[in-house]
Image (cartoon, rainbow, N blue to C red; front, side, top):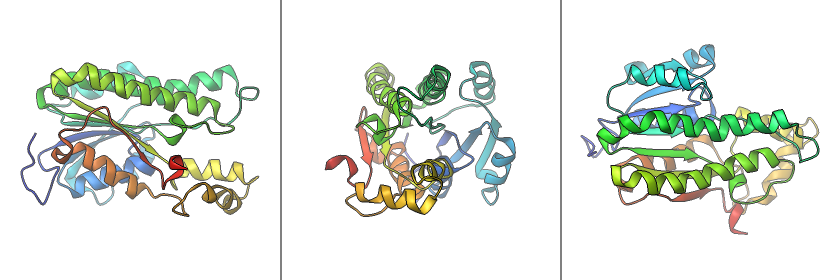
Length: 254
C-alpha cells in the first residue's frame, strides 16, 4: 500500500496494535498516529486503555481484547474493515529457572507471548490479504540468546522468532510481509518490575546490574523500538520479510 503523503509514511494505513495501553505498544501507537495511520488499540486493561487514548483523538479506536481469547479476537476483527498492519506487542514475563517456574507459569508465558501472537495473526490474515499488509512481531533478545532466570520467556520469544520466519514464507504469496523486532532491555512498566527483582527489590540496583551488558552503555526507550516498528510497517521496508532485527544497544553483538 502506498502512503498518501511522503511526510506521513503511514498515511492511509489502519494498524492493529496489541498491548497498546502501555510500554512499547503505546509508543508504537503514538508513532504510527504521528506518521498518519489510524491505530486500533487492543488491550485487556480497559481503564489503562482509556487513559492511553488521551490526546490521540480520532486517530485511534479501541477494543478490550485478551490475546489468548480466540472468540474475543474474532469479535474485534468483525468490526474492522481493511487492515494494513498488525503489531503483536502484548506480552508478559515469567521469571525463574527450570526448577522454580511452575508448569502453569511456563504454560501461561507461552500462551500470552507465543499463542497470542499466533491467534492474532490468524485472525488478521484475511484482512491483511486485501491490503497486502505487514505484520511486526515484538520478540526479544531473549529469543536470540540465553538469559538466566528466564527459561519460560526465552522459550516463548524464541518461538516468536521461529514463527516469524515460518509466517514470512507462508504469507509472502499473499503479499503479506512478516518481520520481528527483538528489543533489548527497554524501560517499560513490565521491565521495571523485572529490574526490581534483579536488584533484590531495588530498581536502580537492577538497572545498574543490567547496563554493563549493553555496549551503548544504557537501556533502550519504547520510542526507539517504535521507530523500528514504524519503518517495518511502512512502504520503505517493502522488500523486507522474515527479518529478525535486534534493537538492543549491541547486546547480542558481543
